[in-house]
Length: 514
Image (tube, rainbow, N blue to C red; front, side, top):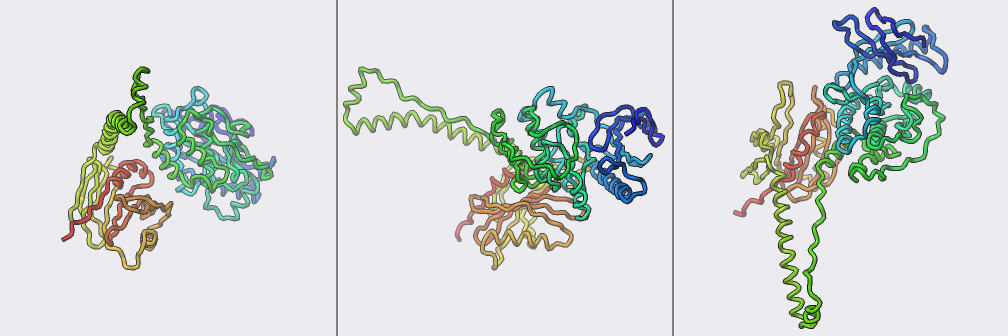
């Protein structure tokens, strides 16, 4: 490609310098001379090619590339609505070449940051959480990034926020299958070392992004490039590339906790079926990692020192009194330890619910603890069975949906005999709503009020709201007791810790016999 540095595109964008090359595109730093102060922006120059031949403007391939370019631009415009993805400012065609103009993010990329210092475990977890929330949004738009790597994560200088950049390789998974097949048969987009096997075969899915992010986090912790990492540039490979053998795990990273090591190892599993299946699943496990407390081992009490001259007389005492004496001695030694342990347990439990208030409903014989800054509203709806709702505090004027926890008590239908059947009934009832789209994530056995229970996690879209819900339910005296946590998907994790405490504190009191 001929250099365009020093030229002005569209009589507006002055090309100041080249920032990087990858595949069939070049990225430039530019100035927008139509705006006061000539703010900086990013101009990406694309040159459609087939092999080593530039496509003719009137060819069918060119027309196809032109349509694809417009589709990519529309996708980028949609993605740019996220506050941590650069906005698309313009797209146009000039001199048989395509151009994208995007917001400039002033800061260092993760690769530059790691060269200065490795990330600590706390910093790596914060990085993962931030990027996973962005990816959750991206995947909701039916988009796979396909080129997540350290150089495509920029930390903005003025506030330290992480931005995900370089969506030039994004592929909308809603494309017709015949177009996907055609695209996959010609090229594979990604970066060696960060690409999972299915992406090398031309069949990426959303877990491919999670794999690449896992590899990126490992690099941030160790400073070591992943295997087969030839360089840091985006590459396009033919499909005849031989698949690498399954890579080793990161258990050798002794400076991080075993739980984080397990999370990263699951993210980079060779088989995509064995990885996390969504960004939310990883976020949930990371939150467990943050809340996981490792208690020190109990201290050992040494037996008392006995002088040698007394040992013989003690040894010769009658058998039974010696045993009794020894038992009393050890009891005296152990009691302080047990008392201290009990005090610690009580203290931990007390501190665990610091800032929580008790709620009791004598009509339904239930108790629960809730955050003191949440509001309580009793419902006792005879149709839905909802007894009470707890609402999170409103964060701002733009907070259109406040997170809520509902408690519902309803009589068991005659045809329901177990918890699994009831779980199926809940899903069927939600799907039956024509205005709602539901995606079930998982169902698992759990406990509620010290009784066997089921936990159901799913997302549902209703109107403009994209919600994620968690329902925990159990049976008691022919009634179903359900706790439902409902939140916007992007904010689901924010109050999950408080909700878990609420669920664990829930109790059903058996009413006295009349």
